Length: 289
Image (cartoon, one colour):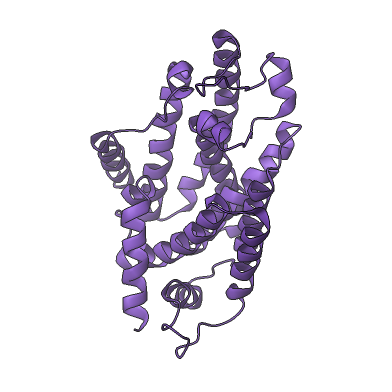
């Protein structure tokens, strides 16, 4: 299989697993869409290793193998054929200035997930978010392009932090059931929360305390969104529309979480497809102004 087939494989992964991001990527011209599908496919591989079953040691070893694979060109004669994701990713890196070292940061963040790392302070959580999501923002910027990459890079990073905090607020209960706590310990103590679960998997903290905690973190996420959205004027129209669509979907999700945190703390919230499509359509219309 060659490069076109490799990109097709990555785009299939994108369509199947990237329900939020796919709405924005549809707004890009085909070459950029293919390149970002390769970025997503490799990032998804890393996430799947971190979130998969099994003991800590083998998963950390697989993450390290993924790190090493980045530095080795895919071998056409490898058993079972070439690694199609890496074929597409290396081709994308030849066409665009992708900061592939950012994948190393993603792997570092996912390794922290495997180890069950917790975060004492908000700045520690931000550092984690920069690893697992800011890294993707910086890789995406390599595909989008910018007249001033030095100014645009921290804004792409900030947008990634905003998206990741939103993910954390969406998945508080799901993560807790998996044995993970991302919210800073200092914030849990400030609002008198423990995130302990009862036998039915419900939080034992008083609901009003949890609501206050979630809304407090939502305000922080909005501040990161406000900073990150300053990236849009630095992008071309189609790339700005793509970014606005993806960010808009997550901002709508954040608004729903903040409006009724009790729902988010009992079930995983998501936007219906029609709502995502409307956000993408507004982003495209705005790009044409």
